[in-house]
Amino acid sequence: MTPEAQPHFWQVSPDNQTYTELCNALYERELLRLSQIPAAELPSLPKRLASLPFYIRRAASAIVRYQHELQLDSQNASWYGRQLSQCPANKQQAEPIARFYQKAAKPGLIVPVYVEEKTLEHIMLDSVDEVDVQQQRLHCNQHGWFSFSGMPLEVSNSDRFLLKPDKTMMAAACCGHQWLNRRKTEPRLLSLRELLLASRLNWRNFARPHTAQSN
Image 1: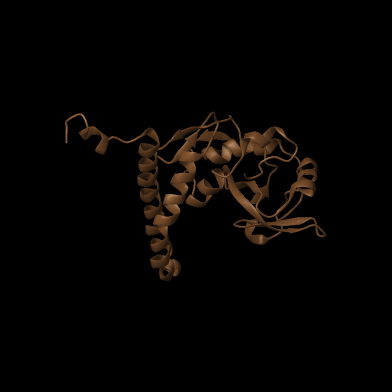
Image 2: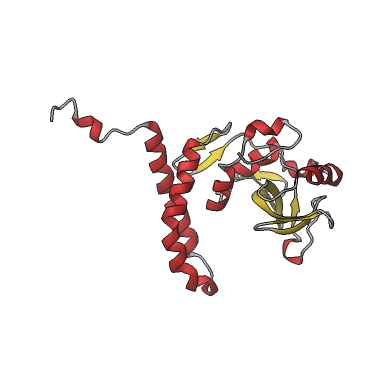
């Protein structure tokens, strides 16, 4: 082996390096999450640990391939972008939200959900898994039932509100932007599930009437 050929065995492409950094960051994050699960969920821990490599590789591969307007911080497995001074969810109104979901609601649609915990506000990503056109409502996989106008329909999601997906809302959700007492605060880290949802967004659709459709 010549000295000139040796570097090819350890040098990696930028994509490979990004992939490795993402995997490392996601392993650290998810192992920390699993170490903090409540005692009632401990019986499911072996199964969740066994599936962890698959979902981490899947998320890292999707993120590397993903064409995104936001900047990627691969060492922290997160995106970052300009944060507004106040949560943009406060500008949305029920009527435009209802009009959007009357036309666009369907299983698989990726949606933003506004969450307020005491005085901490943020926007989370979720996906629609059931649509009830007759009752003008839809079910989000993680956050439950909402009316087409965005109102929560269950006690368990009474602190949440379904938003109309647009570029501003989805960027805030993807970046983990948060507001405490109506002021910007440190972004949260997205869950592995949210990262997988974010990597399915087609940002070219945001200027069109039915935005935030997956690829």
